[in-house]
Length: 307
Image (cartoon, rainbow, N blue to C red):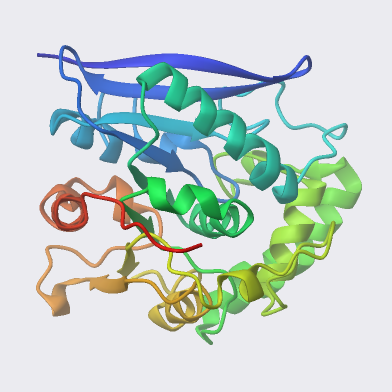
């Protein structure tokens, strides 16, 4: 049986359409997984059209993978421009609900497993805080290199975060009306001015509070148990998600089951993974991808908890 890929389109408004890439093995009706990319990214971090990457790997195991492109990213239309006024608040309150409802309607069931890369994990936990009734529908999650605020002191962090993200990016968004990350070769997709501003605020160790309406995510999640989360850290992820950064994110993400595993040769793995190649390296299939399957198997049923 072959792995198939289909583009699905969810109409958000008369002017905005969200794209989901459905990747699955033909004739297999397995559980579905919801994927969320990070900042200056789109869903292609999880797959290639030649069936390489995490989503095709999971489709081969019988899962139905639904890989999201947030508004304006990837194949979602229209693309980000200076007229794009939305940010991460809209992603949490509008994009997520629309995509999840679409997946449930298309597949016939709510996504049982969730996978995120980088800032996508922050958006997922923010969504859980806003919509706690969803928590009991999700069996488990895996976050690759997800952190909210940066606490590490590696020199590359001061370059990539302090100089570029907190400094030069503001000048570029002022000049262009959005962050042209693709043109700058900072990432695979662009950011709106608002989404950059909001994510930069949180990355600076600021309170986990929404800049639009003051919603306090950390306060809401403090005593709440989210679905079990496996956090993937890479030995060579020096700037964007060192273990100390992920640990801080774990600490503020409720009281549920959370585990971090660091992937590198000194820990018995095949390669010293970084922030991007933890998902794209060919050896990931025998390291973190296999551990993801084990995590999903271990936590295969949602726990019914009081939210």
